Structure formats: structure tokens, C-alpha cells
Length: 317
Image (cartoon, rainbow, N blue to C red; front, top):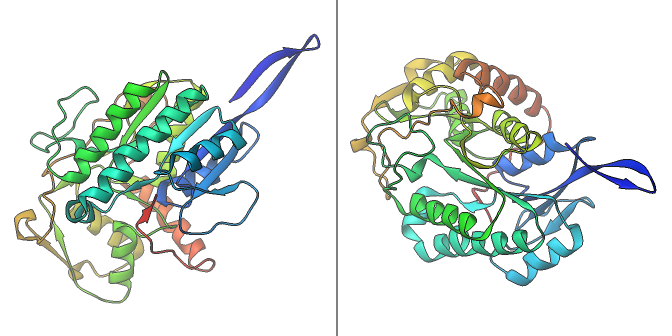
């Protein structure tokens, strides 16, 4: 996407300046990677994991002065807020930190984005729903069961309150090769012949981070605004997802034992069915099926396994 204006009698096009906050994370890194090109000029922030390059800036999103300084240096047209405290059980145990990052940090970013007339893209979650029905559409009643979901919902409200132009992109069980996640944990365990217990009665919309980045890019290119469910194209149980991943990698599916969600000792309550209806986003980009996404994930993993060491952090503010 380009910005255009008249300069000295000629139409001049400029690449859209995009700031990715949390660019070293699971979602942010892939957005940073896929957006780099002629249409977007991408800058990214990191918090603890130091990243090299002129386009990288160290920033704590809970520090208003740091946020302001980065915005002043970059003057972005679009801001993608991909940083968050995403450890669901951690949020339940450390509520003060979760609120500081996911709510107050989001508020600070939203305020400064509006000051700079930048469109804000906020990454949210399926956990804003209680899971009683599943296949949620964008305007269904929100009712989070755990503190992580509550803080992300409050983050959505901050974005709506402070930003005149925004995209709220709710997603579900994001996986990829560049950061620890459910799929990578499965690959590591099964590749070593370890048995795993996976819930077969929790339904989600597992989302490959490449597909998520492509969906966000499609929304930006067509100047969409509002709330969108940007997730995988199918409702699936975590157990069935694990079986399909195991088949894709050639692992022994006998290592996977189905269990009930009530038998798992989680600190935070999980919704039983938080799957997302993705009909709205299909107008802009067709989400991948589970098989399509896992096929791409497998190929990327094989390529990645011969290169960089996988990172393991789960929090990148």
C-alpha cells in the first residue's frame, strides 16, 4: 500500500511506514518479515530480546516516554500492537503485571498513535468469549472467563476509546517456527518419542502466524477498519490438531492421549469452545485450512531446523 500526494506538480508515492510493537515475538516477527518490501517500510520494537539492525528500537510499552520517543523518531502511518503478556496462567497468577502490560500499556500506545494520526492494529484473542457456543462472530457478546481474556478485552476498549482509526484483530492459538508455542511444543515432544496428553473437548481456531500476517496485510491494503476475526479457517479440537500435526511430521500418533479439559490442572479457566467465525475476513483474504497451514508450517520448520536456533521466550512487552 502506498501513500500519495502532489509534489511540484507530480504525483509522488510513498511506502506506508509501519511500526510493529513486539516485533521479536511470535506474531510481530512474522509481520515484520512479511511486510518488508516496496509497499511497506517496516520498523520494529523489542523489549528484552535484543535485535540487531537500524529498523529495530528498544522500547517498553508501559513507559510513556519511551513510547513517545519511538513514535517521534519513526512517525508511523500504521502501528501494529503485537506485544502483550500472553501467558494465560501467568496472567492469572500475576494480575498486576498483566493489567500493566495488556491494559495500561495498550492505553499508552493508543494515545500516542492517535496523537500521530496513525492507524492502530491491535492483536486480540478468542479468549474474550466464554466458550459456551463457539464459532463466534465479531459482534457476539464478549464475556471472558480468565484474567488474560479480561485484560485483552479491556485493551480492545482502550483502542476504541482513544483511536479514531483502528483494526482489532482477534486470533486463536497462534503457532509458527520462530517462537515457543503449542505446535512447536508438540513437535519437540513427539520428535523425542515423549507421550503427551491433549484435551479433546476444547475447540479453537489454530492460526499459523504466516496466515495471520497475510490477513492483516490484506486488511491494511484495503484500508479496512473495525473488528475482525483473523484466525485459522477451521474449528478444531486441540487433540485433532495434534493428530494432524503428527501425521504431517510422520510422528507416532499413539504417543498422543486424549483427555478432558476438566482433567488438566490449569491455573486459569479455559473456554470450552472459543472458535472464531472467519466469514468477515474472507472478503479480504481466505484463511488457510488446518491442512494447508500445517503443510506450510512443516516446510518452514524443515527449513528453519537447519538454520537459526528456536527462541523460547513467551513474553515480549
